Image (cartoon, rainbow, N blue to C red):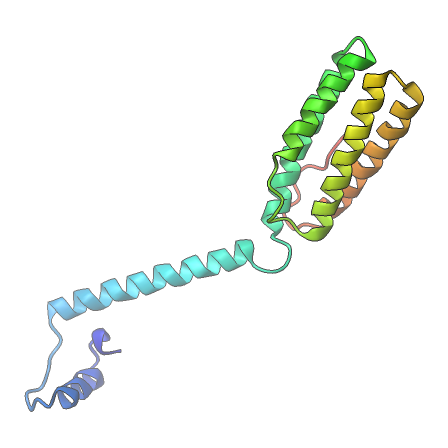
Length: 169
């Protein structure tokens, strides 16, 4: 690289320009070379970090971040469920959780986790509807389905390299 200022580069540069005068490295060329090297270095580090965080098929950081958000929503939902006096009141807390879960962007998630999240949301919707209708048998059935889907989300999550806290119920 000519901007690095090696003797060979300066010699080649003088031949390319047709000049018989030997070129020498100046402070301006040193500064230009160091800035260029720094820009290239920052670019390479950026590319490396992007590949590290976003590379591959799984987008693993996204699963971990999403799972932690789901854990928070689940905890708030269960707290609201436990604090409610009637099944109809309980259904409101579950419906609110469903609304929050539907707002989560899933395009960056791997197919397996994305599918499990969608199934979890469907289980919550069914549970909320059964609670709203006051059907304890169906409510128990869909609560069991919710728990199964929670386990499935946890299993996928635990395979991620950045596991923090599994979903608890």
